[in-house]
Length: 114
Image 1 (cartoon, rainbow, N blue to C red):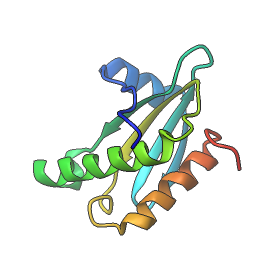
Image 2 (image 1 turned 120 degrees about the vertical axis):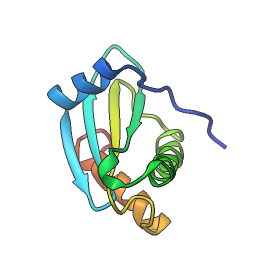
Image 3 (image 1 turned 90 degrees about the vertical axis):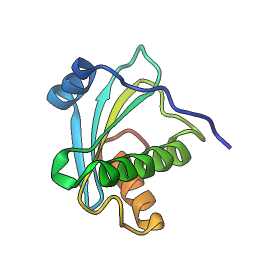
Image 4 (image 1 turned 30 degrees about the vertical axis):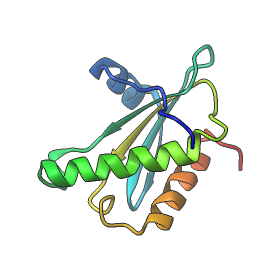
């Protein structure tokens, strides 16, 4: 089992990725990706109050964290800061479709090869 991914933790890191990064939207998530050639892969997760109360937001973020761990930890693409933003469907989307959404968004943003 792959371990925990390195994380983005500071607000300014999230804002930098949002302002300068590439964006890819899917039904269950939005991916923001910023190339950082000299650094290792780092991932951040967020869910706004628009998607629901704390229980729903936390469930959505847990699902995103696990999907990212399974998808990225096998062969992590080096040199990227990624932000995964939960959408309304994140908490209820079937697991295989959530994983497919993440893989598709990573390809669209150029993080993983076609």
